[in-house]
Length: 141
Image 1 (spheres, rainbow, N blue to C red):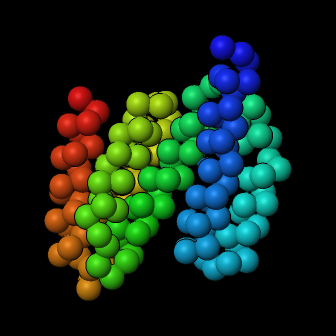
Image 2 (image 1 turned 60 degrees about the vertical axis):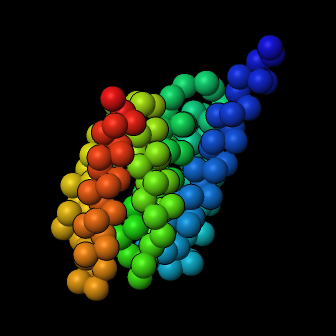
């Protein structure tokens, strides 16, 4: 197994992290901010360096951005599908397994989600949140 085979998943993860950052910030703030965020992430040292070496920080960034995207869909979509809750649970668990800082970020996102639901999506969000919270803890254990 060559060096490229070890580094390739982290490089792909870095590209996907930029993609999910664009999606998240486009949804939150608009297309201009999303594209600027993607451009900054494509040229900043942290995402570039940790996408080139096999360390857990690049994967932690990818799973954090994925978890934030699914959390945003779970929180702000009119009627999110159950698949979004499952994807949120899986990516939150991946954050917890990847690195302690990703674990802390997943915890902060979960706590923040308790204060942000919209009135029209609150009942569905509470049900999905409860199920995904149980799933995250079962997957992590």
